[in-house]
Length: 528
Image (cartoon, rainbow, N blue to C red; front, side):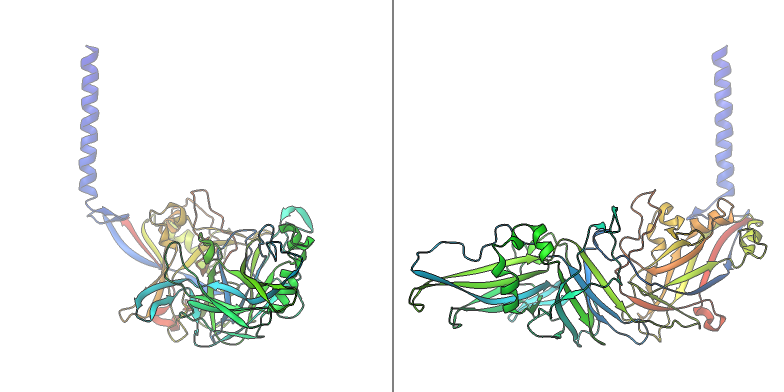
């Protein structure tokens, strides 16, 4: 009897569930991407209030103690529309163990004379091989913005500022260096040609080095190439000749002294180099300092010859060719010398990476009753809308320079109500299936021109309008940095990193911009 009652109950439940499913199918005939289209709901669009203004950036964290950027900028980016950037690199140098000027011992009736053949700073480019023809490989240099036909001034100095891992003022804390930090120099420039005129050159794939005897006569030549892995195809690399006499005095003559007995001793003696870029024109080059192939990392290369002579000082017994490589490793800082710029108060918003400018965005207008919630939000909540889609769009001012426009911009929350401002992720960065929604990608128009950036913030807007959250701080837009995107569901805080130097001019919400003005478009459904 009990079994029959249970069966009857189960049957009733199944019938009810089946009926509910049929009923739902009748009511919701088309559900996709949160959009409801059926006979019981109307779908419409609403444009919410948006205001935007410029938010200049004073400095950004730019060391590899806090986080390793991998990429470091060197050069000059100059444009009438944006802040000029002079990007320089400060780096410690790694030495090998047991460096010796002369490896072998010789008879007492011989003399060894060391001649420095060449010293140069090696900076391998990031490049793409287009083809190999009868003249050799043809490359496209990557990660460069600005005018590659114009030179900037490059000088190399010995740094007199020690890069500490721990904060000297509070040794319990890890140190932090910023893009506007000043590094003291000691001595004069170390490069052979002062104010070396640096122009990126994809054809710089081979370097010929003369090898000298004790009397400065050339006895042979070395052909220097930079290759990747097992490939024999030479890669393009910049080479800046350094002063041979200075490096003999600073390096070779001290190989077996206390200054070179350990890495720590060397760091105390030679605190690093400053690769300084200055000028009013040129290009900005990104170099990879964290390549898995050691040969592709920046370094100082020293080539020298030991000539073994008889006591007469003229008879050559032997010549030993040597090359010592000093990688630019250890602690590094990228410095950005940026001009002061008065940002417009018109309808233009300038986005520029590094220590340039961001956009400060306010959605839904003012809070006139001072209850912490924008008045327009309170009004819209009364509608009980189902939010299907919400997109924030900013159009590019195509009359300004767009050659260096960022491929992506990034939208985040900025709360400065406390003593320490907090930057955090918009909800969609965590919840959306495609987290690139807030990583506003560059959109081209039908003619291939750079037209706009669109941010999908559906979950963020829905959480505000349905009352799940009253937290609606100022939003900011910045040039996208690889460290911006969250890596986990709990990774909600954004750090102040940015080594993306690209720049673009956007229109704000001014009505004079017509259909190019900034918009927050909300698509919603409501019961009829």
